[in-house]
Length: 229
Image (cartoon, rainbow, N blue to C red):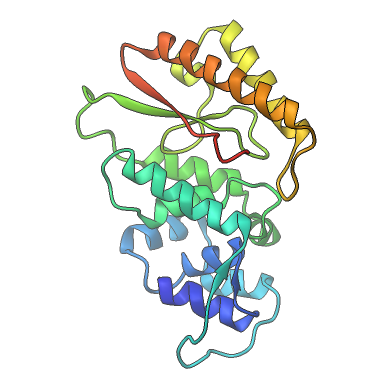
């Protein structure tokens, strides 16, 4: 699958975007379980390729450096965190969930172009995930905002306050904290005002403490927003 990602990128200039990750997830290299997901959803590699921008014919080997767009890199990082937080290896399903997190991503646009709802794909994967091997194990909840996500709560994918039983007061403050970040932080240029950065980080660590207090019986809360410097 890694070769398929790199090959797709080389055909289009050497940068991997989310649409390249999606096409790699439809390649013959993925496990039978992933191919089964696509069959159930009625998605084929040919259909995706027909909706994708024209690419040169197959290349013989991959040469040179391959870089990743910010969204593609973020999807890979998210998939890694989702898997390793449960002691698992990263699976194509982990990556598929994170590739489709952004509603405006190239991957989501490709699925939409062939009449498939990206959110339906993510729901399908969540519904077919096997249960935890040991329900007595403590969970790890990450506190991290992301574009297009109302709640900054993550486990193997995005979570809602209701899914964790969080109080309404804390849920509302988490929502406001995320909205503040979206208003004042620019992905390329960073914070518009350093004062906003400092106060937002302090706010986030206070929220992490409150969240830990509410979830202390079954989960550990890990702040993951220091990248927003």
